[in-house]
Length: 157
Image 1 (cartoon, helix red, strand yellow):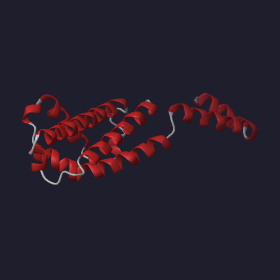
Image 2 (spheres, helix red, strand yellow; image 1 turned 90 degrees about the vertical axis):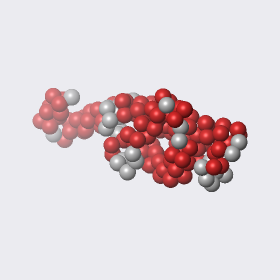
Image 3 (cartoon, helix red, strand yellow; image 1 turned 30 degrees about the horizontal axis):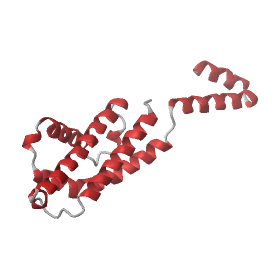
Image 4 (cartoon, rainbow, N blue to C red; image 1 turned 180 degrees about the vertical axis):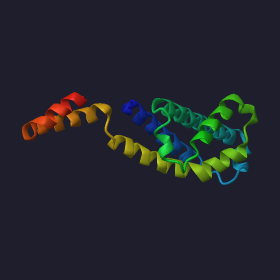
């Protein structure tokens, strides 16, 4: 099992980043809106920073969960998100405003919805410790009703 609290924190930060992207880009209606002046270029830069943070969090979650969590939500291109992070971080001068615009308008709303779903799923999942506690409770309950089952349960722990 993985560090549930850390994964919850990362998912929460990713959701927050998608909220920033959506809020900051609400008045952007075309790629040209990013390129018209210094202020709009700063907006483009700020969105890229959020995409880098999201991509980095995807990589961390994959590492923490041994790539077992995000694969359960295949309608999101997780590998592409991590790859975009690498491009923005290492090839920043090759930035393509068209791609940033498309991702912002076409993919971020869906990503945000799925991140909220994952967060709910993780919050409602049981940790290894909770599963062990449930097993112990079950064994103790069986001790009273079935002594043989109780002994088998003790051997399983």
